Amino acid sequence: MSGHSKFANIKHKKEKNDAAKGKIFTIIGREIAVAVKEGGPDPNNNFKLAQVITKAKANNVPNDTIERGIKKAAGDSDGVNYQTNTYEGYGPGGVAIIVDTLTDNANRTASDVRAAFTKGGGNVGTPGCVSFMFDNRGQIIIDKEECSLESDDLMMAALDAGAEDFNEEEDSYEILTSPEAFPDVVKALESAGISAVSAEVTMIPQNTVTLSDEAQVKAMRRILDQLDDSDDVQNVYHNWDEPEEE
Image (cartoon, rainbow, N blue to C red; front, side, top):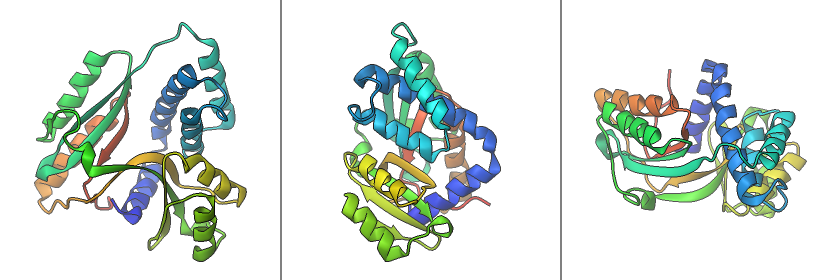
């Protein structure tokens, strides 16, 4: 998915349904709990927690909510134990799909994911069947209208902080980093007064698939909508060149 397409759909979804914040808060809350249990409550010594905090801020999660989540996880040794599972498969037209889940009931989650694929005419495959088509990268999307820096200045600031690539789209900028450099690049941009529409470590497809058949487009959206409805689904990655929604 191009930076422009991703940016357009991010804007559309935020404008369409602010109630989705509840799902985002649930997702990030679980990620914070897992990160703290694995590496402790200090983001300076816990790379995974630092990534989650960056993602939380990009999704407008209040600082006090983040801090409460960290404190709760740090003091809740007997809390819910979440299990991480990743599912890979294919959607209509051979679109590759990766689904990250975080759950306290693996059987329920597996059933929900398989049902989502089935309802859209897709199928879940074996581990590794599509992940080789993606690169694990930090991705930062910035709204041009909200950016005070010129394109060249923004690019230099990002590259100096450790970014690997910079792309300019019609209405946005896309900055790509290694997962390791991601927190440092985000911090450098924040210090320069630049806020991101989206900032996360994600799976970037090496190539994209275009669906020209309207039935396939509807089926693909059905899969994504079904997955989005599940609280156990943390992230969904795909290589569909998703058109901007009306």
